[in-house]
Length: 203
Image (cartoon, rainbow, N blue to C red; front, side, top):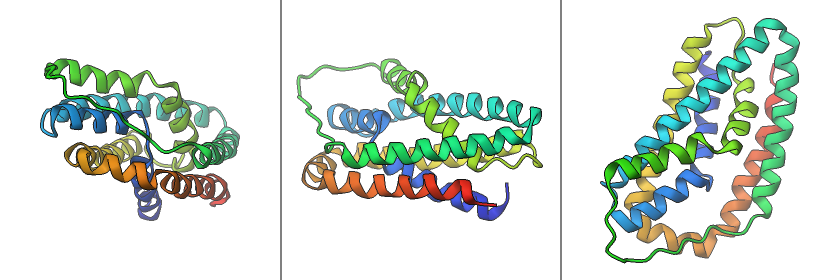
């Protein structure tokens, strides 16, 4: 993966990680209920789930590209339009709201890990999203395994940092999202629309 392509993917990964989603919401609620340290198990499970989804998408896309380079162009345009559509949906979505209660219930580390893993790995929207996003960054002339390693490490690091911050400062993040969540969704949605329409036009 060329350096400029990786930098663009890094920026995109940061944007994805900052966008409200099931695993970010899970980190928020678990952080508020169980504390930042214990929520590390939730985050770890989610990261493994993301790696599994990325692997499934990348090697499936790689097989299509090997069959015909035309498929990469098709996937780029279909994926770009899908990302733009997601951006429109996010723009129109209501702000994230989280209700938590202090009932004294303790949850085991394996249960938290399992919750994070299943939330990421069984989310069909996650599979569709990465299937739309990753063709924009695949170079058919470079090693797919190396590109998978770079993509997986880049995304998991940005996701880990974001979810850890959310979990650690859950008490502050919740009221902030309630105040500016609508505008936050609009900004993130606008970014997705721009990325979705611009990426397929890259040479």
